[in-house]
Length: 285
Ligand code: NAP
Image (tube, rainbow, N blue to C red; front, top):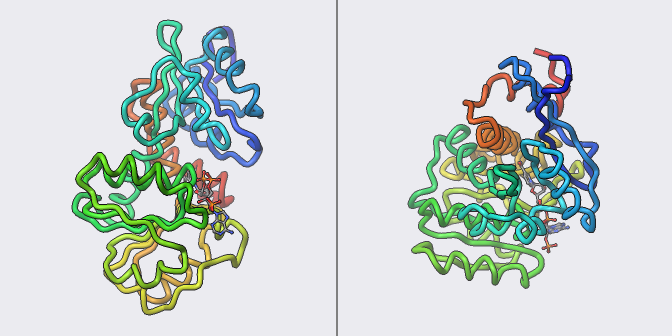
């Protein structure tokens, strides 16, 4: 589609941003549906986020995604925050409607949808151990509680990040426990799903000190990292017999939900998945 005076603009703000695969995924969807829309990536530093979002509104963009480090900052900038985004404590999708900025969070949805797709697993009644209490770990742990998990255990290097999660989960019927990272192995005996939401594994070979015996066929291991495609955690878990998935499915489904929020159309998932795999792994099929 030729860019012209009617082209509708969406995009992503982040710092850094050059690694993002979201333009490939969304632009493939627009092309497949022959929509005159384009998705662009913008490097925005945190002190400029407010002005940049006002620009989105004033220049009549249809919306933007927000990634590191903007998801929490945006809560105090947008005019309205959707209820789930408020509970998850982060905004990753912004729309512009009637001159107002509205914030949503599609990461929680993307995570839950990915579990269904990868493991045919629904969170209701499950016992989940989340490693990580940064933006992703917090949103995932709280989404598990919102979706009716029986118990959430969160392990994080920095314990100060655990109390806001405990507070939010305390409003639900889900049991909550916080542990140290070196207590994960012992806690895994009573867990259905292990999630890595730390940055550990982003560098090839980096991993956790866990014994093979914890990775039983009854355990599903979801690593939110998708680059590299197989972290040391996933490699060990798969070899030792657990079910495994990397984080590309979460990225896909959060993007698909954002697409649907902006356009009101059903996201063309196979097209978006292919574009994402081509952008992230160089696949050409
Ligand atoms: P963040 O807010 O910066 O949080 C980083 C997390 O990693 C914190 O829990 C931090 O612990 C932990 N961490 C960092 N280095 C560590 C180390 N050496 N040892 C132990 N823990 C360490 O980042 P985020 O946005 O939550 O992202 C976290 C992960 O999720 C990243 O790997 C990212 O790729 C992934 N992610 C994936 C998707 C997806 O769609 N698949 C979406 C968002 C994020 P401290 O609190 O102790 O610093």
